Length: 329
Image 1: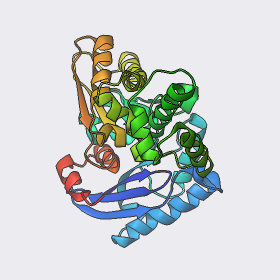
Image 2: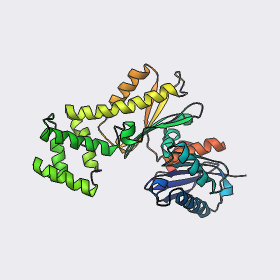
Image 3: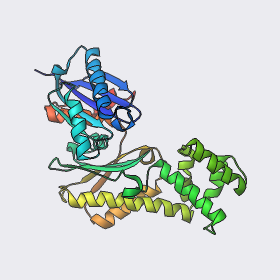
C-alpha cells in the first residue's frame, strides 16, 4: 500500500518538494531550480526531463520510489492555459506516480491558507494573480497577463508608478508628491536632471525591480500623500474586483465564510496596510455583509500542495505539523 504523499511548488527561479508519510511526519524536503517551462530553452521536453530527474531522486533520498506515493500535487508556474496544462500534465505523467494533480502554482495558496481547500488566493509579489478553488472543487485563475489583464499590482508595478508620478510632477505639470524625496534618496541623486540619467541607466541594466523603489508609494501613502494613495487605490480596485467576481461567479455559498489567502511580499511583508484596507472596503461594498476572512500566509506555498495531496489520499495531516516541518523554508 502506498504510504507517502508528495507536494511540489515549482517556480520560475526555485522549487520546493516535500514528502510526508501517512502519520503526518515529514520525511523529506528537497530544493531545485526552475520548473517553469517558459524559462527553459527546451520548453516542455526540458520540463519533463527535470521532473524525471528531480522527483525520483528526492524519493530515492528517503528510501522510496514512485510506487510508494499515494498522491502527489504538482503546482507548476507556467500552467496558465488549457493547452499548457495538457502538455505539462503529459510531462508529469512520465514521472511514474499514478495518482497526481497538476495545477498552476497560484492555486497552492488556497489549501495553504483556507480551510477545506476552498477559497481564493491573492498573489501580490513579483507578479499579480488571483486564483480560486470553490466548494465543488472547480478551479479558476485570472489576471497575470500584465497590461492585457490590467494587472495593477506586483512589486515592480508600484515602483514603476512611483517613478512615473515623480517624473510627471517634474516634467509634465503633474501633481507634487512626497514620493520625489523618497525616490531621490533611493536613486542617490539631488536634482531632476540627475533623475533622467538614473532612469535611463536602470532601464539599460534592468534594475528597476528594487524593494526600496517598490515601497515608495506605500511610504508616501502612509504620510497622506494624495498621489501615492491614488496609486494604491488603483491597485486595490483591481484586486477587489477580481476577488468579488470570483466570489460571485463560482460556487462559494453565501452562508459560509469566504476565505482569502494573501501571498507575496507586498501582501505578507509590506508593513503599510492602507491598500489592504482599501481592498477590504471595496470587497465589502461588492459582496455586502457576506462573511469574509483574510489570511496572510505564514507558510511556504508548498504546504498547500501537501494539504491538498493529503486530502486526496485520505491522510489526516494537520497544518501545524506541516508548518513546523517547513519552518526552514
